[in-house]
Amino acid sequence: MQAVKQTANEVWVFAEQLEGTLSNVTLELIGAARALAADLCGTVATVLIGNQVDELIPTLFEHGTDTVYYVNAPIFQWYRAETYSRAFCELIQKYEPEILLMGATTTGRDLAGAVATALKTGLTADCTGLELDAGQKLLLASRPALGGNIMATIVCEKHRPQMATVRPKVMPMPERISGRTGTVIYEQVELREQSLKTKVLEIVREHSADTKMEDANIIVSVGRGVQNEHTLVLAQTLAEVLGGVVGGSRGAVEKGLVDDQHQVGQTGQTVRPKLYIAVGISGAIQHTVGMNRAQTIIAINTDETCPMMKLATYGIVGDAALVLPALIHEWTAALKPSIA
Amino acid sequence: MHLLVCIKQVPNTNEIKIDPKTNTLDRSGATSILNPYDAHAVEEAVRWKRALGGTVSVLTMGPPQAKEVIQKSVELGADRGYLLTDKAFAGSDTLATSYILSTAVQKIASSIPVDLVFCGKQAIDGDTAQVGPGIASRLNIPQLTYVERIIEIKPEQQTIKVQRHIDGGHEIVESKLPCLVTVEKEINELTYAPLPDMIRAVRYHPVVWSVSDLDADINAMGLKGSPTAVKKIFTPKQRAGGEIWKGKADELAKKLVPLLIGDVLSCRQ
Ligand SMILES: Cc1cc2nc3c(=O)[nH]c(=O)nc-3n(C[C@H](O)[C@H](O)[C@H](O)COP(=O)(O)OP(=O)(O)OC[C@H]3O[C@@H](n4cnc5c(N)ncnc54)[C@H](O)[C@@H]3O)c2cc1C
Ligand SMILES: Nc1ncnc2c1ncn2[C@@H]1O[C@H](COP(=O)(O)O)[C@@H](O)[C@H]1O
Image 1 (tube, chains in turn cyan, purple):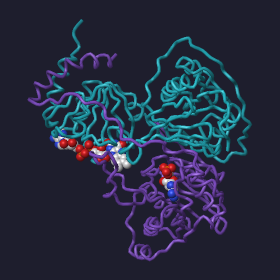
Image 2 (cartoon, rainbow over the protein chains, first blue to last red; image 1 turned 120 degrees about the vertical axis):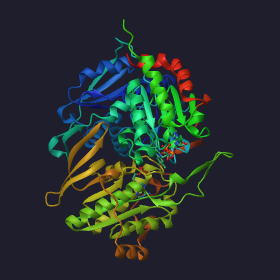
Image 3 (tube, chains in turn green, red; image 1 turned 90 degrees about the horizontal axis):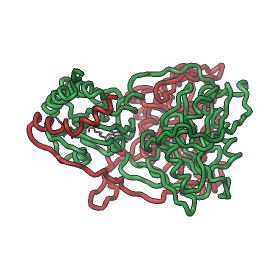
Image 4 (cartoon, rainbow over the protein chains, first blue to last red; image 1 turned 45 degrees about the vertical axis):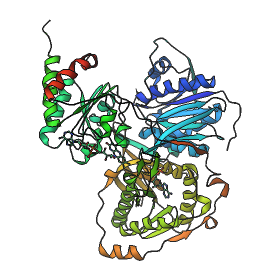
């Protein structure tokens, strides 16, 4: 185990990419890393591992990274815990970053667990808040615990790097400064395919919900209060009129109104739309942790005392079956393309 | 085949409430259950045992009453159970937990070699999903996380092929055995226990090990062996609410639309 010593004060971010497409959470984390690096009087570095993904480098700089450590080889074509954690551990031992952030995605969590164990350092999973105790160079990583009922702030005092995985959509997307550049450091890692134990045979993208809902600006989300097929169709129609997508609570998923790829919340997706319309959703904490960063929240609910009403920018008390048609009518009229 | 499943007893987080007056957790109504993902892991191991022959062992670290989740697993078809219980284990974070569990896996494997280790995708009390990769890393075996389907296991070739969930889709991965798999709920449907298994479960007593039964470094466990520590617990900050509107639906809709039209139009560009 490594004791704390003088390091370069670098905050590292794992650049998660799939076949050359960078995940948005990488850029969000670069933004978060900038804030931490400012408090540390340090710099932000991104670790990019892959096969011929050079074209991603400018994007990383333009969103705020100072250095890119680039490991480029055919063996890294697809993510494998086996190869990526080896590469990561070697880089960490060489450059000794202070903090290492990864997205709390399936890939990020898979990698983080392997790396933290190999380096015997602390890892805080699924964080929703990051702060720095600058005096002690201590990362204060906050995360929901016990089903979202409480928040816990976790620290790792004696081991480096301090590692955290962070939920997508929790940190704001940093502004892109076009033309901003930095340093690329090319790294090589000795690995031979013959000595590896795992092989990726195929990648299948399901182009449906996942990506679309995560990035949607407008979400109409349904809950158990959507009592029948008719009301569901109304909610879908409203989403269509607004150009949004349909999401749901776990109650709705259990009821079969939406599939589980569309579930918003602690065990579903975190979303950050401009407009979130919660139809017949009570607002259990496990649901609200996934959507309370929406810019505007509209609640439609018969129960004016439910938690969602307390959260909403505008809470409309009423039966969804009556409120939705009125909204569809008004929006359709308001959005009718005018003949120019 | 020897299939070993790591299982955890967790509080049913559905039943935990916050006392609004004191802002403290009220766990009084919460019962302890077998972590739901781990139940699916046991079920999957049992199905493969039935297909290929062999043994299913389950392993848990926890207080003495964690015996209950071993009995539950026997009900689901597990053959034997190991309970790790000792004060020295208390306060372990995920690094220390995976260390302790991996030493127990090694001890179990020294009498019957283990081909496949199963974990749940995550435990619903901690939601960290770190213990599985931690155990794999300690045992130096491949990890296949978020597995939605085991496509095939070939005992002669010592290989496994699985479908893993990844963000935006899935991938098919092949690995050599032994390896560690963490499972999603979609992997199977739990089946009802047949009566003989239920009776066996009630009477089942697991093997119980304390720290002295393991070949383990006491400094790498408990609070001492845990690099992370909880600094503060707090209740999440509530977002400030807005206005509550009551009245006739069409009037409310007329009032709402002008307030949001700018935002909605900007989203459509
Ligand atoms: C570990 C854990 C993880 C979880 N993860 C998630 C998660 O990721 N996402 C999630 O959503 N939940 C999650 N849950 C479940 C969560 O606790 C709630 O049970 C769930 O969100 C409730 O869904 P709901 O609001 O649709 O249903 P309910 O709580 O049943 O609410 C229905 C609402 O509809 C209203 N209503 C009824 N009729 C009408 C009508 N005609 N018109 C308008 N309104 C009406 C009612 O007043 C009520 O407020 C999790 C729970 C646990 C324990
Ligand atoms: N105390 C424990 N005893 C046995 N298995 C555990 C324990 N803690 C975690 N696990 C296993 O690791 C998985 C992930 O747990 P976690 O990393 O806590 O989310 C669980 O689903 C279990 O399979």
